[in-house]
Length: 66
Image 1 (tube, rainbow, N blue to C red):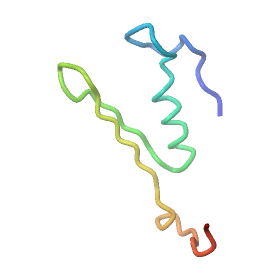
Image 2 (cartoon, helix red, strand yellow):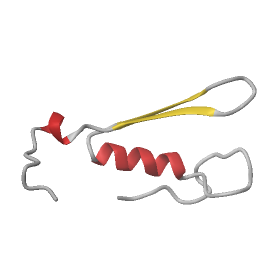
Image 3 (cartoon, rainbow, N blue to C red):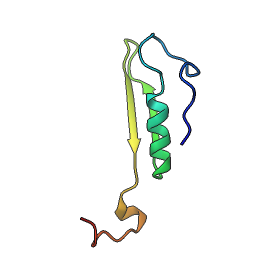
Image 4 (cartoon, helix red, strand yellow):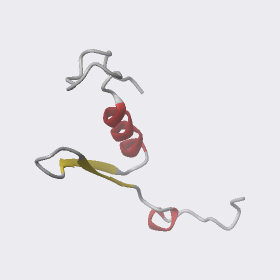
């Protein structure tokens, strides 16, 4: 996986690298999932939904899993 260079992702404050949701999105996609983020209110905050497929959905046999 390659991540964007720190500073190339826009951010609202000076703390952190601004890569958090980008990394979550890349991991979710690597596992057949998705991430949706939206502003939850005009006062701030956000709603982030991460969806991943279960092994049952993928057809994997879990009988040998520990």
